[in-house]
Amino acid sequence: MTLLENLIKVNGQTGGTIHQFSNGSKWENWRYFEASYYDLIKCGIEFPSKSSFDKLAKEYHIKIQW
Image (cartoon, rainbow, N blue to C red; front, side, top):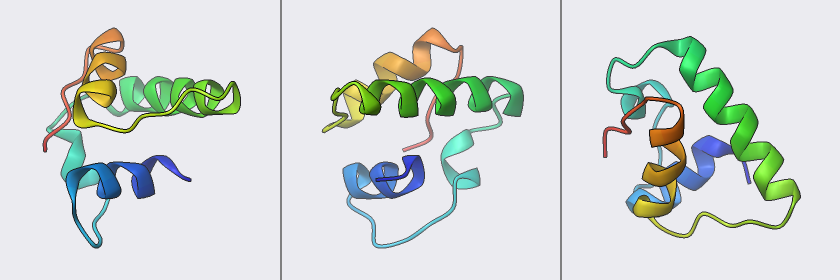
């Protein structure tokens, strides 16, 4: 599942764009956040909730706009 698909699923939406979740955060930070997300899911770690995404996002100094 892509980052966008999982963000949409966790937020209970049926569609959207990555930009709506960015909340004006630096895109460089989002690239690192996205790379980390994919590394973690390859290891079997899941992100079933908003709080799990928020915890990862905090590491990259971004705030997800839910």
